[in-house]
Length: 143
Image (cartoon, rainbow, N blue to C red):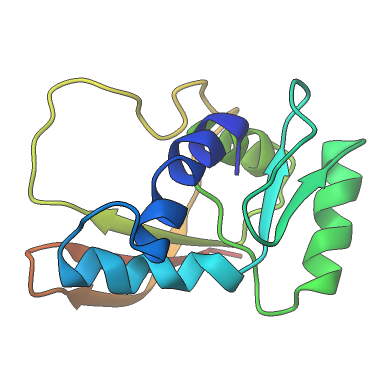
C-alpha cells in the first residue's frame, strides 16, 4: 500500500481492534483481521511503520515487488490508486478485486487517475453480492 492509505488505516483500525475506539460489531470483527496480516508499504518519505507486521519495501519498485510476490505465493492485496498504476505499468498485477459500493460520491480519486499506456482486457472470475449492497468482483488479467 502507499503511505497515505497506510496512515489512514493505522490511525483507526488498530484502535478499533483494541477497543479504544467504539464501533459496531462488524467493523470490530473486521479490525482484528489486518492486525496479524503482513502489511507492505512503499514510501520514499517515511521509514517507520509501527502498526503490527508492517514492512517497508525499499529500492527499485519492480525488484522489491517481484521478490515479495515470490515470498508470498498466495498473492498480495494493495490499496492505493497511485501504487496500482505504477505496478500495472510494470506488468505486476495479474488479478483485480473490486468492491462496488452503492454510493455515488461525485468526487474523489479514481482508479488509475494517472493513466495507463493502454487498455487492460480482464476475464471475470467471480462476483458476489454482499448483504450491505456491495458487489465484489474478481477479475484476472486476460492473457
